[in-house]
Image (spheres, helix red, strand yellow):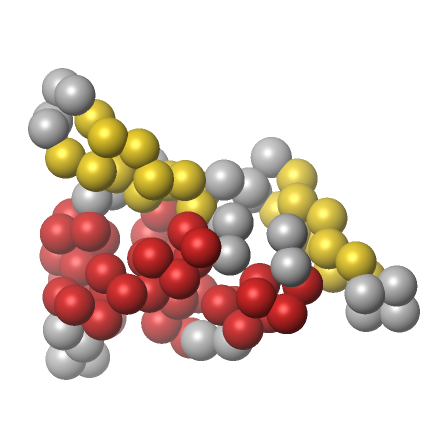
Length: 95
């Protein structure tokens, strides 16, 4: 996992809020948008939430899985805890 990619992904209030929404259970991009809109209602568009989900997946913070039962892609937290050692330039992810 690349430290800079993770830090860039976490350097967004919106993406941090998305991670908090996903801490309860896996959600589709539409469900994430709906929950985000209900809780924060700051005018963010659905496409923006989707791009944020993809960035969080790309840097390794989220898993993306197809749910056969619900016939949709769900995003879920890959790790519950992140520890960054700035001196060593190391990042540790804990499930």
